Each structure stands twice: as structure tokens, then as C-alpha cells.
Image (cartoon, rainbow, N blue to C red; front, side, top):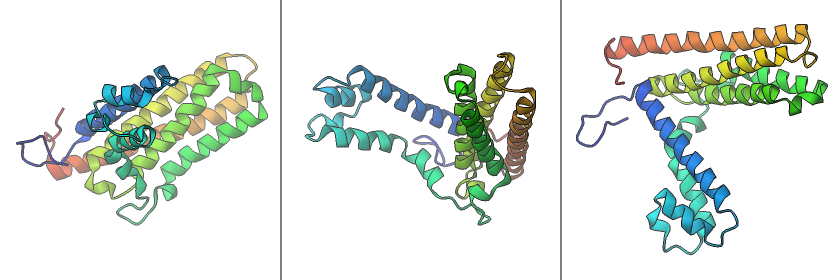
Length: 223
């Protein structure tokens, strides 16, 4: 990734990527808020385009298609890191042990919900399931593509996966306190699976950070 205008080209580290991903999150969140606010307004798409700064659309005729296209375009760089499932070694992210553990966790939680439908209305259970699925998605992004060429991007996605799985762990602890919702044996299995994913993410982050320091030196991070 290149630096800012006038700066020499350099690799983005995890902090550069994190700032970029936060910006994309912000754009998406702003768009969704505007869409909710002006959903029934006949000038909805014009208002959204103006608020989002998409001035090139203010004279366009087909609003909905153009606005949706620009929303997709705003995250193009992030999407491009996710579309290629093959890594440098030829291994797809679906074959990676850590991704399989995270995906199996989401399947196990789904099965838990099927066995106990009351969990679908329990906020802690919903948070557990949602963030476990988010962790799996972020791991897929981290492990896709030629990630050794974008170590900073990989670490940034791993950090997001770690945040999501930590939220799931906190939700699981809250769920256990709600008497009768899950059994002790179910909680122990859930906890074991959550720790397996969390420890795997932490270990992989350490490996990538060590590789970054090996390639670019210990003082090469740009906070």
C-alpha cells in the first residue's frame, strides 16, 4: 500500500489498516443511518448522495442503483482482500485449522439455539452468536489471499476477530449467570471452543508480528 500523497511508498502496518477499516465502518454506518431516516422520503437517494458526499450523483437519474453501487465501491479495497480464497501456500481459508474451529463454533451455537429456542430472545445469547459469526468472518478475511504480502492487513483483521471472540466470551459468561438457560456441561463445551479460537488468534497474531519485525525491523510500525 502506498503512503499519502508526496510520501514514499511503503507497506501499511496493522495500525494503517485499522484506521482504513474504521473509516469503511463509519461510511457504512452513516449510510445505514441515513437510509433509515429517509427511507420513505421521495428524495431519499438524492439526500443520501448529498450527505455522503457523492456529488457526482446529484444529476443522475437512476438513484437507487447508483447509490447502492457507490456504497459497494466505498469498501472496494476491503472487499478485494476477501474475494481470493487462496493463500500464498495454496491453502484456502476454509482449510485453515483456526477458521475451521471458528466455523465449527458457530455451528455448535446454532445447534444450541435449535435445542433451546428460548435463547433466541435472550440478549446475551444473541450477542454470543452474532459476535462468534463475526469472528469467523474476520478470520476468513484475514486468512484469504496472499496474506504474506499484506501482513499489516492480516493483523488488523485478526485484531477484529479477537475483539469479536472476546465479546462472545463475555456474553457466554453473562448467559451462564442466567439460571436455566444453558447447562453446566453446555457452558464448559462452549467455553472450551471459545478459548480454542481466542488462543489460536493470539498465537497467529504473534507469528505475523514476528514476521513483520523480521522483514521491516522492530521500529517499523506507524501508529
